[in-house]
Length: 279
Image 1 (cartoon, rainbow, N blue to C red):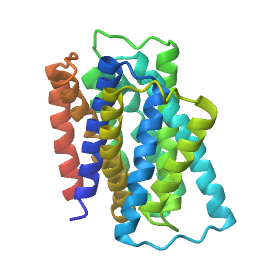
Image 2: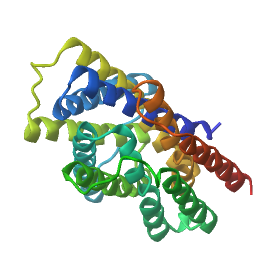
Image 3: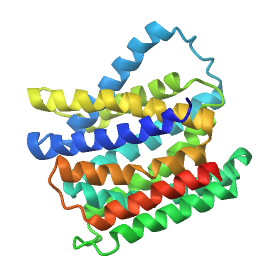
Image 4: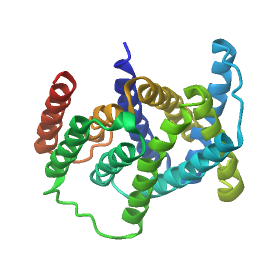
């Protein structure tokens, strides 16, 4: 049953990013406006969930408060850089950059947590990333070092760091409260520093933003439960399926170019994941 968590996480991430890109292209929403909708939806949804699950409020020590503050700061950078880059670049171009995230995240997990020092998963993650790179190595759209690409790289680095922060946090508090603290902090900082034009939001922009925000609640909670119950490197390995789902969504929903080679590499990657899990 625990295996459903990483699968829900990768599905939620892929579907949410596709809806966000559609919101950019069709509704012309601004990054600050989208971040406000996503995180306000997350905060409200998580608060409502606490009425049903009745989890006690965690005891916040000084070290835990510092960890939460660091997590919020990294999350602000991750989302800001990612969504600024996503608003200026083709969705499929985001994936070759984000393909580097699992390697960095896996190495950090290996270095920081003795329980994550399973060489089998680290090697499988590295091989998987190489396969994903090969699947995009001859794209006609080249990665030029402009501002949008730099933003995507910075977002990828923050994203690789944040999963290890999650691992530390989950040793003390539950996934629901960890995600609630993160989303509340990011929402407040977004309102404070970026001051999005909330009054200028249109109905379609709100509908798309709230829809993807609800999907992210499921995806992000599933990722945290997967890290807690199955381990960080195992979760990272399964999340390598995400690019394949985004490629398919890019083709079906956004009419972006997706080649047969990308589909083939995603299929090989799935076989490697299955082989590694049952080896």
